[in-house]
Length: 336
Image (cartoon, rainbow, N blue to C red; front, side):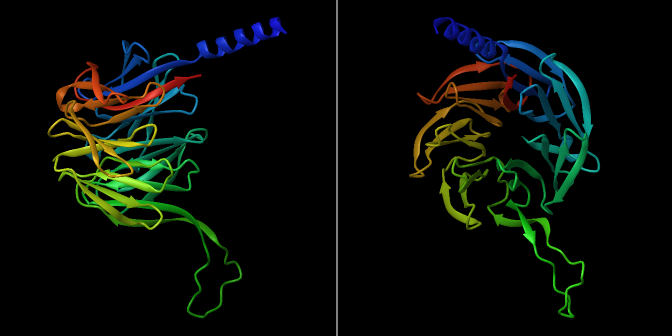
């Protein structure tokens, strides 16, 4: 038995050591994806990407990274990078959709917003083709959240001041004026959009762990909280801090971190009471990444050319990282 336990320990240790873990960060000025060691945060390598990289996600097994390029809504490429070799694989041509930005990867499908085309697209990785697209009809469809079952997705539409809620539903055939359905009439699956006005400039958003609320930040200092079941704004918080840009729920769901790209202040709000808990100076933040394992927050402070690291236990900034000019998108890669 002791020998079997010893062998099991070796196998488990081998599996754990086989997994590589990185922080990926984009530098827009340098046009690079920077790979950092997860524990030391030292830079391992920098990989060339497109001319305007904004967001990054990885495949389910962490072996491939996808980088969206926007170029003010005119670009049509998503960079594909092998995280085992640290080499570019190819570029996905998103045409006829332009200006990819927000990204989500689920079940071998890469979802992306196309802000230049007022749409959301989905790329089938196995089939290597664009397999679906849906227009929002809204200006600057920017960030994206897809539910784990892929049956709902949400976007912020910055210039239109709305949140799009899309639901995958089974629609019954439309009865014609004759009152008689054609013999071949059948139900069909489609996406239905509900628009929730939240105020112009709403960009950064996150969804609560129970999937019932969507919080979004606005440059006028307000936070709109959308009830995702009732499809309406249920609460509005005036933080009195202008330039609010991005926000994220902490891994335990107790707090919401909201940053101002104008003042450089990071706010901690209690997600239940909706009250401010703490406010610190961290830099003019943009992209945010929550690291559950180490309970820390990474935040790209684009105008300041640095990435701030915040200890969520103490709610204090503990480190500043130089990954290159105008840092933006961040993610964690767990390479199997």
